[in-house]
Length: 456
Image (cartoon, rainbow, N blue to C red; front, top):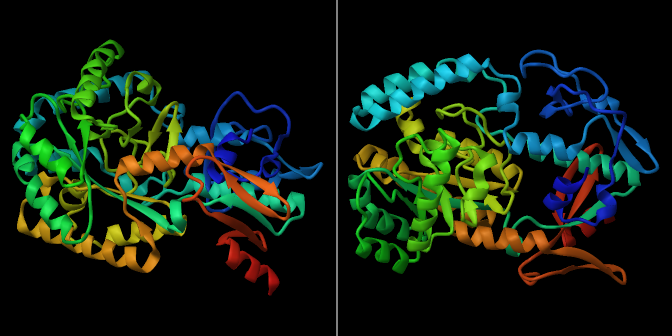
């Protein structure tokens, strides 16, 4: 019951002790865990709701304490996985016939998409996305349900154990407050040609980014350009196979395409992958031979495939590390919302950094070719440079996040005398932080600040 909790905090195991009240129901559904966190899964206390709208049962009301352990009406592992792996999407959806009809319409649209001008695509997409603002879940513009649930579990554990603070291994290396990734899906030959200029722009803000290249069909990326990207300290990843929208249509077709995608991954020396249009089937990821994936959005309201992982932190899907896309894409901002400002990005940055999370951006070279859009991107870079200096923001390449998160997943806290120390590879970069209980809320402090707070 405690694996996602312990993986997230890397705290002593004694603080991850939870027990289950009764037997969970056979039917999964929506409920609350506190006033501001919607969860999905099975409860043992009462029937869950078929929809996230309306009145939802609050499972916090059913929490008891037994032998210094919180007793819950749900399994935390199942609840967190149901969100991260988007199991709620098909759990209470429309019937099989409606899903097949939507799939047929989607296939027809993507067969025509390469030949449609942007204004036609905008019109079709706005029709398809009608009513998205009324969806209560995932919560727009950033859904932090996983973080809220885990933080609430931590508070319950502290109350049950009668402690004021709990040590854990901080989320990022060297005490960084959060992390920001800049990535670029390259969709057309025009975008391909703009890559050197994009690197020039980013260099003026000391930003290095990852470029996702389509291996077949759309264009032919010259080896000289790929070498230039590597030589300038940026990263190459694979972007789908041919970006036709059919990668996950059939299992047999996916297996065939995955073999080709893996081949290109080896050719590019790529550690990462992102599918076209963020299409995904997380049950099939074992066929992809990559260290990390970047195809799961935090919220899918403005994407053709609904859903969202409801977290602003990396997490593992089997052996693959998922680096979720936590901010709105430039195409959606410019062409669906019609917004040529960075105000929405700034709001998302604020919400994500409140949880010390991962800021993941996808800016297409193809869509910042016009001067108006390019100006917005430069404004975003200026803003991130300011946040980096003021908030101690880490801005690595995706592969660096992958290496760190894997090292952190193997680290553990060890008590030596009256102090805690971190064991494991990379521990020289790691920091000990403390979760401090203030009333029923938890805040995070580093060792020195935690000592000062408790001395007051």
